Length: 433
Image (cartoon, rainbow, N blue to C red):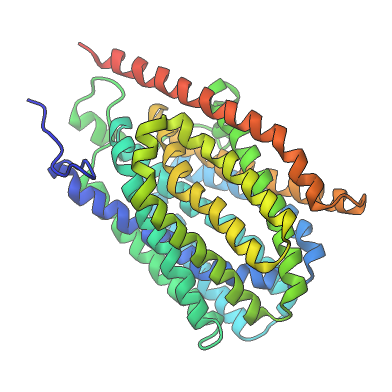
């Protein structure tokens, strides 16, 4: 007998409720911790001048080149039940150390630069690890129903994090921000462990429950750079690489223009931190509205391909708004719209793409794409922005140049959705007796 969903709106089965709530709380803690320190990162990044941001992006990419093999070694040698808590707790410890250094005003510019780079590295790792866990614990069918709800937990975190940052930045200082972020990461570890008890990874073949339990508790093995090898061998994963490069390139060009506008208007770290916190609050409010009113019906109507294609459309609108009105208000609205579309619609759809690949690809290839490829696109786009500015090209020209790339981006969205559906059908056929 097929059980019907217990809640018509959310389509949650009774046995999925605990896992859904834990996933919601897990995502909340991960993103709230990051958004507590994100405004501080952006403010300190401008201390050396907005014209130096490309060096910070390049340094971030170089650190990624070192961090990805280290992460790959941990994944190969430790089971997920050990390396996931290890990643989060090491990051939490680093937050406390940086908080002390910043609060003591020790080498402010250089500590700020290192902090900017480290936050830019760690935020991708903790978010990628979270989604690797989710796509490992939930099936493709569950992902389509539940990932939007779980994403809302992150949205709440992106609201509470900057709200606390805006309140605490001028009253309690940076140490309070980093301590709070560390506590949230420890709570995230507790949610992860409870989530393991409430879920079992979906079977890709006709495995028994004991076989699947043994698989999740063993190390994956493989080489340190196995994620790169897996990507090279798969057209599907290469398509995800191109999608990520288009996404991060557009985001970085917008970020650099945002930095120039904010640096011209605000002179000190505290007011810049408050401004960036308000931008993050704008994103959170818009995302919550989209998730409550738009996400579920839109994905049902246009499918995964349509959800992914929302990103190039929102990007075009953001470029146009910032080119026509280069002031802080337009920055807040343009970035708010674009990032809200990303978090509320595109991210849940993008994560569904990963539910049909192997467990090794979920933890290894996914991490390479969402960290190394992401930051590589950042670095290249940062230097492109500087080069175009040196040639006298204004942001308006960039807004025109982005149009054909947005068309390619939309086509790629449809292609990835079609390949995902093919893989889903193939997996179902293999499990038939």
